[in-house]
Length: 114
Length: 143
Image (tube, rainbow over all chains, first blue to last red; front, side, top):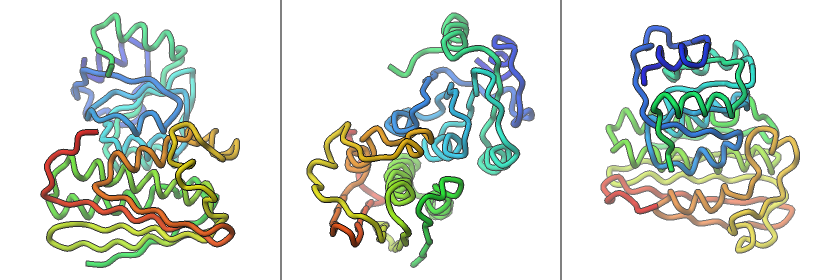
């Protein structure tokens, strides 16, 4: 799925990385526990989370995650947007619950990491 | 090449800055991307541990042609039982640390999984030293 398709599916807003809306992801992982995210070996995973802080983006940076969906209507700060831009991380905000977000994306063809 | 970075205990806004800088330097050196990821994941886990548990710390980074050695030295409470701390699920993290998405007792085991070599020494009420060594030409580590 492209970022654009993800945004449409989730009725989500692309907060940064609009210029890379064609970026494609095939697998996704949902967690509010960054320690779990850091154990993933796969690259280019879509991260779905309700944890909106600087460490979410730092974790994405270290894990080579290029796209993060903040679900549960979480809003990210200006500081977080700057960090995401600095590291070329595409960020989306979505009002749906993590469960609904995952369900819709799974239904649309995104695969789980395991 | 030698670099040093300061870490401030409790400052979660800045946690990860040093790991990010190390990642940039490894990229400049054209190190294999898989090795970069293992290096920065292990370093970031260690950096977050210093922020979460210690008062302050310093990261000493030494690169040569074959490897990078990342040494994190902190001043803090230390680890009374390192074997226990290495067990998955064991954690003494505060609620603040857990709110940041950490503190599940997974950091040290994940550092061990990612590092080519990991050495931890600690003295209670003094501090902890973690040394992560990564070899640039090593085959992909089976995690």
